[in-house]
Amino acid sequence: MDSKPNKLKLNYKFWIETDTELSVLGEGKWKLLKAIQETGSLKEAVEKMGYTYRKTWESLKNIEEKLGIKLIEKTRGGEKGGYTVLTAKGEKIVEFFDKLYSEAEPHLNSRFEKLIKELNEIIE
Image (cartoon, rainbow, N blue to C red):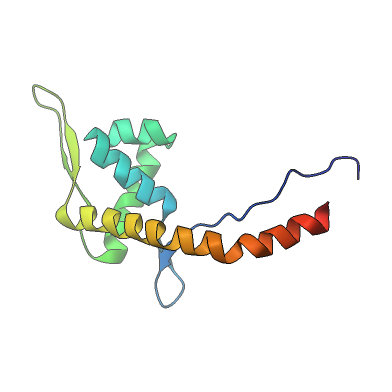
């Protein structure tokens, strides 16, 4: 092999699934919900994330169906245009993922620091 990889690092994602291993909600939709929270608009959030509107709308409805709760409330048009907000439960889902990453990340990074160092030594 001619090219040598850069130094390796740990990367991971969390997602939530049912006990039958049906994926429900992951990092991408968590970030989308945060973008909706920040912008007040599904359209702006979708553009920010680089997603397509229709597919994202269907995906959010699918997640709501799997969880049995509403995540967003959408208001169409009007004088100032429409807007989208998270429901109280949608906000709690965002808080859950925020907490999951903020609490798990330092632990994972410290725990795997030695292991990653060993892996990088192998490829040197």
